[in-house]
Image (cartoon, rainbow, N blue to C red; front, side, top):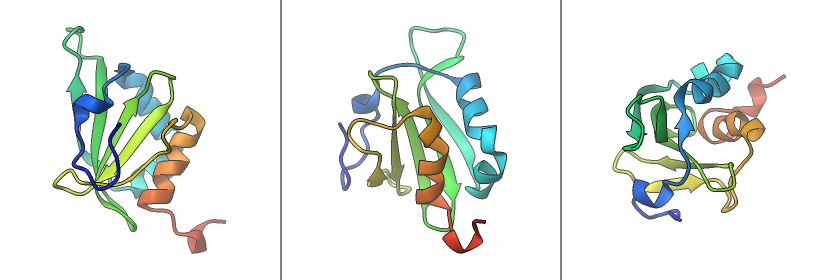
Length: 123
């Protein structure tokens, strides 16, 4: 497992494949938060086992939020929970989810808290 302060090794994070359409449906389910991250430049760790390219090992988004400017990496671990890493542009891990991962209903709020959320603006 990758730790804070290390350079992210995407091979260490690989475990389960993520279905791209479902993942982006989840991320965009709260479009206001997703758009506030300034997410662009999405790249994917494609699975070599699947030629359709609809499944990937990870998603990387470049973000430009209030708290974090860099990359957000999302992996699906063996417990069907998400491991999320925030890195700088050189790949050094600045923050990450707890060791066990987070549930899909926590994903957007966790990323938003680390990337953009400003409590003064929340109603």
